[in-house]
Length: 486
Image (cartoon, rainbow, N blue to C red; front, side):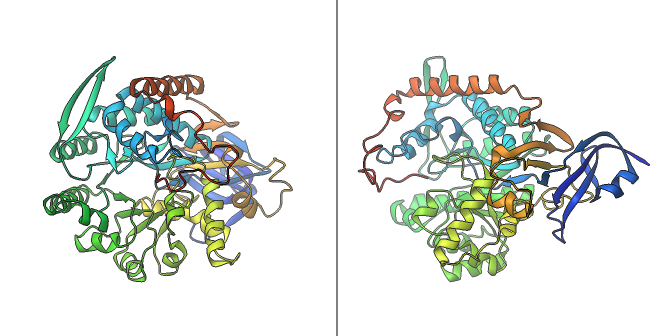
């Protein structure tokens, strides 16, 4: 017999391998950080002697879920001002340029990574900022604080860093206690910081770095001066060149209505490009995405998917790799990818008035193997098969909303939620067991998150943003129903 570290035995395994096998009474053999075998429990029990055998009868095992679009920083300001005349966007821009400290970014990173872990999200993209793609790349301290926070939790993270849209310079601030100092930050400053974070963190442990620039849409060509728009194009091409040179993912947040055509015209697209939202694309833009092999991050729960429609089904039928993102936690959604799978099905079925659209197995692909492909990681994660990283999620099906134990592949997608996750393994390391983190101090993380959120409110005088707005109760819609949020 072969000695191994872990043997999961007795559960229903949704492998997401090339044959999409679903194995009842299945087993997974893990040695160090890799899966070495997947098959019937009786067969693997005869082959391997495990340091620890984990009995998973009555449970469902799936690959670690992957979230291809979310925002660092948002976890400590979620819902603030979101229904108050668009103040969320203003708050984000201010918080990420002048209001936050490295301690804020560290606390938020730990909270967000812990939330992902609890929900079975073993890998996710996190943009180091938000709003109108306001990146906290004026100094490497903020990105380093974020990466250190995530690394301490143990989840995989693709941290997207980059530059802000012209005009430059922009005013950024640092805090030393209550003392604030400001400086003008240029594109060159942000590009240098992004390169520094790339060199320092890409491939370190479970951290990878991606590069980004703001999306250029028709509105920017119309509102920016010709010089600023031309500068934006040059800057985008400079960052894109670095992404290709370094062999890392290039991503952009907020594609819609003509922006894909603009991205093609300036040479942004390709299999290493991940475009988020992609709403209201024309038939020609869908063809461009398919022809260039560009990947799409579809965020069905996002405000953008209310303001327009991502033609995810049409892109899938055109052969495009479309993966799921949460856009969490900005400003009204969590990192629970079960929620987003369910939202995705209903979103498109409602549009087509057809309940046969997007079978549950397809949306599970979009949150596992397709998401891994979108990140260029399909050789490492995204399915449970020999040779891949041992990123395994165990769902406890002994719950009223998941019983009876029949048709588990359907039940896991249609009815499960993140709180049904019982165990999470990353790189063969058990990080969540019995629904509780194994090495992370949850109480300390929550206390730090509360303290940093309170400090931000005090520092930026945001008390008016955390109360109940007019229209919260009693009305069919807010009086400022057309407010813009992410």
